[in-house]
Figure 1: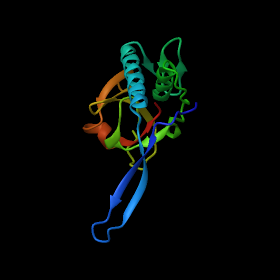
Figure 2: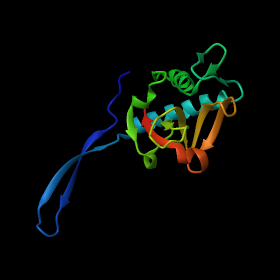
Figure 3: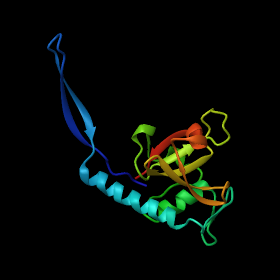
Figure 4: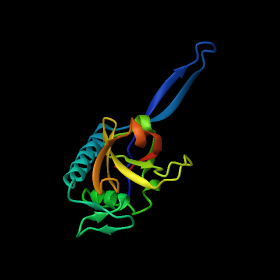
Length: 165
Protein backbone atom coordinates (compact mmCIF):
# COMPACT_ATOMS: atom_id res chain seq x y z
CA UNK A 1 0.00 0.00 0.00
CA UNK A 2 1.33 3.41 -0.92
CA UNK A 3 0.70 6.38 1.31
CA UNK A 4 0.16 9.84 -0.07
CA UNK A 5 1.96 12.62 1.76
CA UNK A 6 -0.27 13.88 4.54
CA UNK A 7 1.57 17.12 5.05
CA UNK A 8 2.84 20.17 3.21
CA UNK A 9 5.77 22.26 4.33
CA UNK A 10 5.33 25.47 6.28
CA UNK A 11 7.88 27.82 7.79
CA UNK A 12 7.80 28.94 11.39
CA UNK A 13 9.87 31.94 12.43
CA UNK A 14 11.14 31.95 16.01
CA UNK A 15 13.09 34.69 17.71
CA UNK A 16 15.01 34.53 20.95
CA UNK A 17 14.19 37.54 23.13
CA UNK A 18 17.59 37.46 24.87
CA UNK A 19 19.93 37.18 21.88
CA UNK A 20 17.69 38.46 19.11
CA UNK A 21 18.66 35.34 17.12
CA UNK A 22 16.11 34.35 14.50
CA UNK A 23 15.58 30.74 13.43
CA UNK A 24 13.57 29.33 10.58
CA UNK A 25 12.10 25.90 11.07
CA UNK A 26 10.43 23.74 8.45
CA UNK A 27 7.42 21.94 9.89
CA UNK A 28 4.69 19.82 8.44
CA UNK A 29 1.13 21.15 8.22
CA UNK A 30 -1.73 18.93 7.05
CA UNK A 31 -3.47 20.06 3.87
CA UNK A 32 -7.18 20.44 4.49
CA UNK A 33 -8.26 18.27 1.55
CA UNK A 34 -6.17 15.30 2.73
CA UNK A 35 -7.43 15.49 6.32
CA UNK A 36 -11.03 15.78 5.11
CA UNK A 37 -10.61 12.78 2.78
CA UNK A 38 -9.15 10.69 5.63
CA UNK A 39 -12.01 11.79 7.91
CA UNK A 40 -14.60 10.78 5.32
CA UNK A 41 -12.92 7.38 4.88
CA UNK A 42 -12.74 6.97 8.67
CA UNK A 43 -16.47 7.64 8.94
CA UNK A 44 -17.07 4.88 6.37
CA UNK A 45 -14.78 2.48 8.26
CA UNK A 46 -16.63 3.12 11.52
CA UNK A 47 -20.04 2.83 9.88
CA UNK A 48 -19.05 -0.47 8.27
CA UNK A 49 -17.66 -1.86 11.53
CA UNK A 50 -20.88 -0.93 13.35
CA UNK A 51 -22.96 -2.56 10.62
CA UNK A 52 -21.44 -5.93 11.54
CA UNK A 53 -22.54 -5.80 15.19
CA UNK A 54 -24.56 -8.93 15.91
CA UNK A 55 -23.40 -10.56 12.66
CA UNK A 56 -19.71 -11.32 13.36
CA UNK A 57 -18.29 -14.03 15.59
CA UNK A 58 -14.87 -14.10 17.23
CA UNK A 59 -12.44 -16.98 16.83
CA UNK A 60 -8.73 -16.54 17.47
CA UNK A 61 -6.60 -17.10 14.38
CA UNK A 62 -9.59 -17.14 12.02
CA UNK A 63 -10.40 -15.03 8.98
CA UNK A 64 -13.49 -16.53 7.42
CA UNK A 65 -15.15 -13.78 5.37
CA UNK A 66 -17.97 -15.99 4.10
CA UNK A 67 -19.13 -17.03 7.57
CA UNK A 68 -18.12 -13.70 9.19
CA UNK A 69 -15.83 -15.34 11.72
CA UNK A 70 -12.73 -13.29 12.55
CA UNK A 71 -10.18 -12.58 15.23
CA UNK A 72 -9.50 -8.93 16.05
CA UNK A 73 -6.93 -8.23 13.33
CA UNK A 74 -8.69 -10.17 10.59
CA UNK A 75 -11.79 -8.09 11.38
CA UNK A 76 -9.88 -4.80 11.01
CA UNK A 77 -8.27 -6.19 7.83
CA UNK A 78 -11.75 -7.06 6.48
CA UNK A 79 -13.27 -3.65 7.30
CA UNK A 80 -10.40 -1.54 5.98
CA UNK A 81 -10.25 -3.59 2.75
CA UNK A 82 -13.81 -2.46 2.04
CA UNK A 83 -12.55 1.15 1.78
CA UNK A 84 -9.41 0.26 -0.20
CA UNK A 85 -6.86 0.07 2.63
CA UNK A 86 -4.66 -3.04 2.65
CA UNK A 87 -3.89 -4.12 6.22
CA UNK A 88 -1.83 -7.20 6.95
CA UNK A 89 -3.46 -9.79 9.15
CA UNK A 90 -1.55 -10.15 12.42
CA UNK A 91 1.02 -7.43 11.62
CA UNK A 92 -0.93 -4.18 11.77
CA UNK A 93 1.13 -2.78 14.64
CA UNK A 94 3.82 -1.76 12.11
CA UNK A 95 1.62 -0.33 9.37
CA UNK A 96 1.01 3.36 8.77
CA UNK A 97 2.67 5.59 11.32
CA UNK A 98 2.49 6.01 15.07
CA UNK A 99 0.28 8.61 16.75
CA UNK A 100 0.07 9.54 20.40
CA UNK A 101 -3.04 8.75 22.40
CA UNK A 102 -3.72 12.48 22.74
CA UNK A 103 -3.72 12.88 18.93
CA UNK A 104 -6.01 10.00 18.00
CA UNK A 105 -8.37 10.53 15.07
CA UNK A 106 -11.32 8.48 13.91
CA UNK A 107 -10.12 5.45 11.97
CA UNK A 108 -6.80 5.04 13.80
CA UNK A 109 -5.90 1.53 14.88
CA UNK A 110 -5.55 1.16 18.65
CA UNK A 111 -3.49 -1.66 20.16
CA UNK A 112 -3.63 -3.37 23.53
CA UNK A 113 -1.82 -5.83 25.77
CA UNK A 114 -4.82 -7.76 27.05
CA UNK A 115 -2.72 -10.15 29.11
CA UNK A 116 -1.81 -7.19 31.29
CA UNK A 117 1.83 -7.76 32.00
CA UNK A 118 2.48 -4.11 31.05
CA UNK A 119 5.43 -5.15 28.91
CA UNK A 120 4.10 -3.55 25.72
CA UNK A 121 3.30 -6.81 23.98
CA UNK A 122 0.42 -6.33 21.58
CA UNK A 123 -2.25 -8.99 21.25
CA UNK A 124 -5.42 -7.03 20.41
CA UNK A 125 -6.47 -4.30 17.96
CA UNK A 126 -9.52 -2.09 17.49
CA UNK A 127 -10.60 0.98 15.52
CA UNK A 128 -10.78 4.38 17.19
CA UNK A 129 -14.20 6.00 16.73
CA UNK A 130 -13.60 9.41 18.33
CA UNK A 131 -14.91 10.67 21.65
CA UNK A 132 -12.67 8.27 23.58
CA UNK A 133 -14.36 5.14 22.15
CA UNK A 134 -13.21 2.29 19.93
CA UNK A 135 -14.87 -0.64 18.18
CA UNK A 136 -13.39 -4.13 18.06
CA UNK A 137 -14.11 -7.82 17.60
CA UNK A 138 -13.67 -9.49 20.97
CA UNK A 139 -14.04 -12.94 22.52
CA UNK A 140 -15.61 -11.44 25.65
CA UNK A 141 -18.91 -10.94 23.79
CA UNK A 142 -18.11 -13.19 20.80
CA UNK A 143 -18.42 -10.31 18.39
CA UNK A 144 -18.33 -6.58 17.85
CA UNK A 145 -18.27 -4.28 20.86
CA UNK A 146 -17.82 -0.55 21.44
CA UNK A 147 -15.77 0.36 24.52
CA UNK A 148 -14.10 3.35 26.16
CA UNK A 149 -10.37 4.01 25.96
CA UNK A 150 -10.57 6.43 28.85
CA UNK A 151 -11.76 4.17 31.67
CA UNK A 152 -11.48 0.65 33.00
CA UNK A 153 -9.76 -2.33 31.45
CA UNK A 154 -9.00 -0.83 28.05
CA UNK A 155 -7.43 2.32 29.49
CA UNK A 156 -5.08 0.20 31.59
CA UNK A 157 -4.14 -2.11 28.71
CA UNK A 158 -3.69 0.45 25.92
CA UNK A 159 -0.23 0.25 24.27
CA UNK A 160 -0.18 2.40 21.13
CA UNK A 161 -1.95 3.59 17.97
CA UNK A 162 -1.18 3.68 14.24
CA UNK A 163 -2.67 5.91 11.57
CA UNK A 164 -3.37 4.05 8.33
CA UNK A 165 -5.80 6.47 6.66
